[in-house]
Image (cartoon, rainbow, N blue to C red; front, side, top):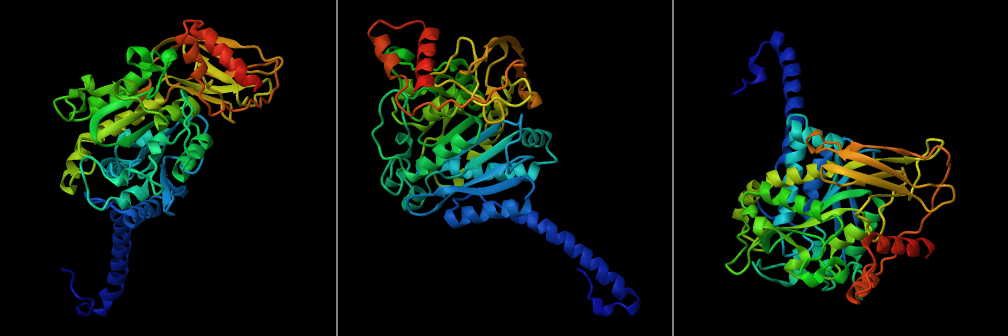
Length: 464
């Protein structure tokens, strides 16, 4: 116990007051950090979630940026907290990563896991070398709840189903995106539109969408047709090998997902992973939309057999998922990245940069900074750079790609076109079923080689 100041002589009173003031200043600072970090294992409703995010941003303003993507049907903010050395803006060479949870309002574990992930990242920055290097070399976007209306509507927690799955208009947000295989005739919801605009605005490279109701990592494609081999019960993406690696990265760093036991005796997932279409066909999903139109590889993480488990289980869920959440984020540094520059050293936007043999139906293009990011496993690849403008000759470059995830930086390779000064203005891919024609051709037995098909689609998109 600190003695009362009145008991001290006048000689000691003033120095003690100054000293005590310094102690209070330090205690106040520590209290601010504790306030931001004080997150218990229970469910946090809208006001509490917002208050926590604001406290974190207030305590770590240089490391975080808090903003809302818009509002839900019922007027709730769609909060996103950005973390990193450059939280307020994109930095050339720094990849963009995102986690999204609670897309189905009654699937609640992911929502709380992301709040605890935020807490873990900010409180360990500067002391934990992995967290520090991750935040110094990655811009991380965390959206704890895409469907706040559905979460608040779930009055009675249930392991299997509730109306809280849907948004305020009764729509399933994971059936609400444009689909690459068939026309998705739905009214795009405010939450969906906000996320689509977010994907368009940022250069996301890697993402995961957190769900509940199973224990598995699921990867693209969720929908399919003959062009992607769906007749064989598996809808194969051009980057299938990368998707399998990403799903295994999460499942094998999870406490038990890798065992593949599933949630009952009828359904198992070898290695704790599954191709989305092989599990069940899904039209209008966010995972496929990210991959086709966002140039972002996204997987779906089913984190709990019970959609809305009791609060006393949340601490164990955090222990089970923490290592996997961190290791998955590191995979954003797979592959190769760089810029495409013209003869004056200025960035060339909308140039097409892809690895030979894995063309995308909507070609992957450089952003406004001339940047590209290609997630590729270690190996030898031929990178093809092209642009649909006069005088721009394609470049082919063979690159040997190491595994640089432990170094928190993909291999960097820039392409320069010294004789060209261009500003490309290619139109974006239309949000229509781009795989539709390919599927019809394949089903009719008239399918051209994959590269020819991709080139045909590319030409059509260029002149549209």
